Image 1 (cartoon, rainbow, N blue to C red):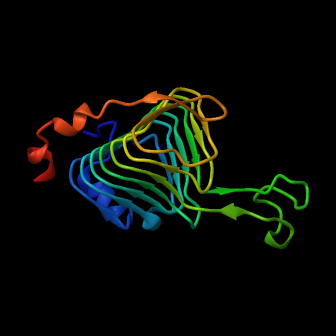
Image 2 (image 1 turned 120 degrees about the vertical axis):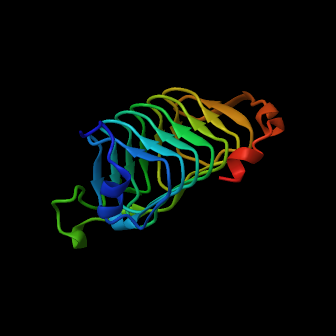
Image 3 (image 1 turned 30 degrees about the vertical axis):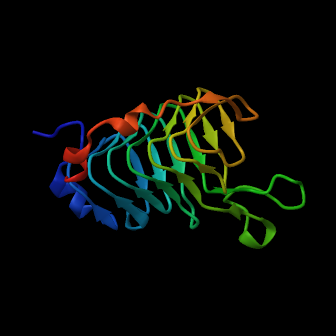
Length: 187
């Protein structure tokens, strides 16, 4: 009987660059270019997510419902113990909207200027619902983006960020670093 998530055997047959153990990917997720996607252990991708291009998932990662990850060739990296809530979009590639070039994937490449820069979500970071992260951004270790935040620039470690200007509003607790996670690390 089929479950709502792909089985380990089905995941192995999909052609991912790597699939760890305890990986749960919804059958309702859309995956483009599986050979460019590397998945660690304990990773869950929910319904209606889109995974496209080069993406690397570390361990203990959650990608919530309807989130889109556009890795392009530059790539998106989720380090260990990170999560991204629903209705988010992460872009490692974007059209140039300056007006100097045409846009969209149906236009021949010689008329466009696609901007591709890697996006990195560092260890212990969380991305709130409805956030957008643009090419070239690094979300520093331990950061949290509040719902609806637009990240156009790098953050600094252990901060909570808010809004369309991605303003640091306060320090984030580092108490989680005191937890004994040795049992998780051994896995």
